Length: 244
Length: 71
Length: 146
Image (cartoon, rainbow over all chains, first blue to last red; front, side, top):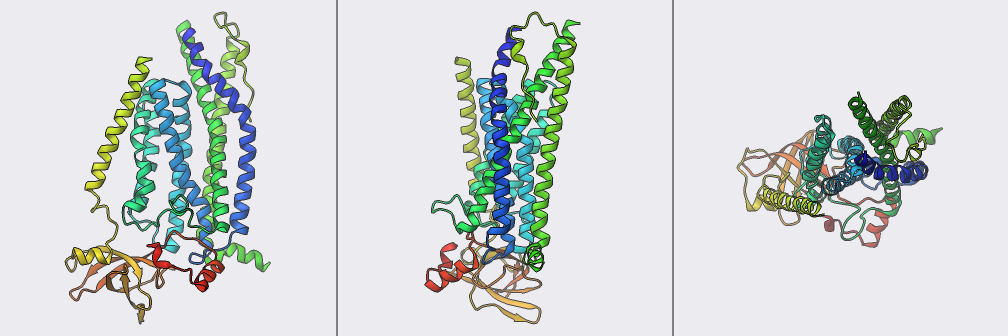
């Protein structure tokens, strides 16, 4: 039982802290989403070249940012779980994966919907699009790996190694547009010489980016909580079996 | 009325702009619903599990066990 | 403490090896990962007529001629240029001075016969009024974008 208490100590503090944050992050998500959608759809002007299709950017670019950010978060959490055996770290990475997969999927689909009218194609196998598709497969592989082990401690170790190996793809995605000739244009926001987007179009983009981040935090709190409680349930079920 | 029609037309790109927003909304809402459903399911299972075995003499801190409901 | 430290070093060492291996692989594949060639690449390393590849650059100002259903234009990277012919629908973003990627092959006279034309846009986004004002004040430098 002493081992159990040690394992419970951190998750319990984690649950207490996150349930205090939860209402605030939920409120922030709602406010930022409303502000981002309003400025993006009603205030932002059309682009001088791309017209109204520039509004696809407000759901496409933040989704891609989240896909990269969440994978990086998972890699860091996996490293912490692997090295320091922190019980919440592995569960946080596991809980974040489906959120990251959804955002990556959305960035690919909205990018396709933007590429067809502007580029003249739904899809090309250039370095940016291909590396982003690989990111989606890394997410799916990570999720599948968790489900293919019966023993959660083995699953967490295997999944953590995949998360760490796959994180090499994150800088490749970021710099793919600089290293190779791609159909996708170079970076517009995070560049050495500052954003290449006029403020009236940049503002809704950044608000949507913050909204998606707040959304991620809110959903992560729910999902990590479910993971912690599921693990507690599993421990109780196992100890009940032993008592019989 | 005309203004509303212009807004929804998106300069002729309505079939690209609105599906982008629609699929984003559908996927993110589905993710929220499935995450909350799983949490509710686990919470309920844990409650019934702990209701079955109220006496736990070995346990050192039973009071701290109850967490606030999240919804 | 020592076991944790050992795990830390193992993870760090693993990441270093992985990073170096990936860098080596990417450097060796650098040429084959190219999505398109520029007119200058083509001048340096000629491609045999009839072989399929992609060529990318800017649509040269004043070079677009419409001949019935066939378009003639030049793709330039401001150093070299390649004449292109294309029969089909052009994307909405296709215009003179803008980025373009064409798929196809060279014919015997050195003209690129495109089977598909894609538009490539730059990383700048602005309202039409701002673009007009920049052009008016002479601050417009489209070649700086490529």
